[in-house]
Length: 477
Image (cartoon, rainbow, N blue to C red):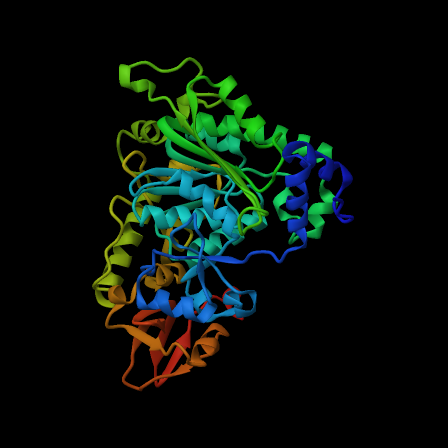
């Protein structure tokens, strides 16, 4: 069988890999409708809640078999256009791509890296599994894609993620042997994108496959350098050829004998409902069990940089720096504001305050790593943990990220809830002011009802019967 729109070399490669009969079924799948999926955000809702039932009815959801929180939806329901999407109740994600994080299975409290994270599907899935506990570093080297990643981290209310924009060698030099779990959704030739992206077909060639395999090999070496003894690495692609998948993993295992393959999984579009995905789960030997370390186990990492924070403080005689003192003062300003405005809210445990100009962030910490400003010096950091707000002329103004990370109980009684079918939700998302009772004063968390739950859309500040809209201009639509 020949599909005219697909490169002949690609079809020949598929036939050689699968055999004529199965290749025919695989190639025929390109004429079938593509699958659409979303994943419920368990940082905000329970899959058994009335809100989840509401979404299932609204978007005609059907379970994705390999992901407990994943669902197929009907394209005509357009969940990406609904206010519930702006509220961060779910993430639109291709169903096959949900398989990689399920195999990695990160846990609360761990130190986790998503090395090529944009636009954020796997990062947000990892964060949900971590349940707000531990440290997640989500990295994306391209500036525009890093910005989109940071926006998705904010929308889904993730408190414990740092978004970096760095080349993998810059991270491996800074964080050797640091991570319990690493997700590498590697840049690939994108054969699984052919059904939904004609440009991916035009860019494919046998040479592009080789270029991608070479790039994947380079990134994998940095990933190995950052993986703790006993840690696990999930390597995934949305491509089908063995060169970028099984052959790359075989090369990795040959080069690093302290690694072992735990599992491999493929999703094929002619066998399952999805665009296709490959994932391999690798574990590093826990060499520290007997007090030894595997030869060359640090890979290309500079292990001398791992204690940059401690050396910096030692040079100051253990004293805090002016920047640390300013950040600590700003955090006290936030605490004073929150005591009045958010009495039920508690800051994440172990976090370190960081001040970027007027912007106050809280760097997250895990059982194994407490980030400080020194760790991030020299890196581009689009989002340095949870953005609490801005300190302006002695007053504190809460950040949109803080609003999205809250639940209604933490903001009570300063909550203004819009009905689930109310046109006022769309008005608020356009940036419009809302009419409220004249008795309403000060900051309020604007929420949207769904089932029995109330879910944040952003901040409003009430005065004189008007709720002034504080939704960032870039998010208004």
